[in-house]
Image (cartoon, rainbow, N blue to C red):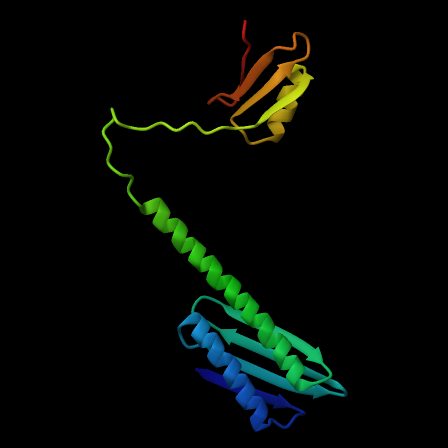
Length: 173
């Protein structure tokens, strides 16, 4: 762990150093590897300002807080960085999970024994509409198939996207 302190118009106390080191050790435990931190503590009139830069393997996190008390500024800034570190770690974990799921080979099953699943979809319109209305509604969606009731005959019809970019219409007799 590498910590650089900079105090502007402020006397750095051992209590503040101890507090900062304790919070940064918690970051290292959370991440599992050492971090590098730059802390800038400054006082302007009645405002105690803290600027914390934490460099990790993949990113640099920065937090700036300003309150009446130096310890409260440090606490809020460290909480902010800790929240962001947890979020980044969760994102990384999710990315790793997705890659493993995609890369797993499917179990080898003979073509005769392959099981086909039926997945139900509720993407249809109960409201009767014309074909033009259905096309306009279908263009706003990203679905492949749209089922609707025709306005003229109250019969069901299916609208689907063709590979050439046009729409196909299936009407039962």
